[in-house]
Image (cartoon, rainbow, N blue to C red; front, top):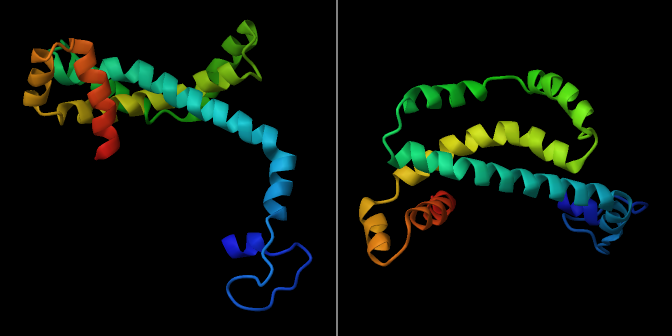
Length: 162
């Protein structure tokens, strides 16, 4: 695919694996024609990831380290949310979005995508928080870090390094 993308559009398909005269004109044309859509994709994906982490990290921390009453039932509900088809969520959100003016907006798309991202992030981050050695948290607390500082950054670092 990469070598095909570097060949000139009107160039012949002969030769070896790599074109003799590679050209990035295809990439330039794609960015020129689709650049705005690329920016939209970046805004929505980064916004969804950030919102999902902001909402899921405290929940994962509480479910992993605190004795929360009904945590098993809550986690089962979170797991069930992963099985709900996206179409049912879209149908339910359409009316609310129409009333609030979120149709065809970046914020509306971020919120809609986060409905699937938050439950998944809770499940993944809970496992990451439980994997943090207790000694590390105790050492951080002795060094003056608060409970919140001990959980969220380590949680995100632990999830990224495994």
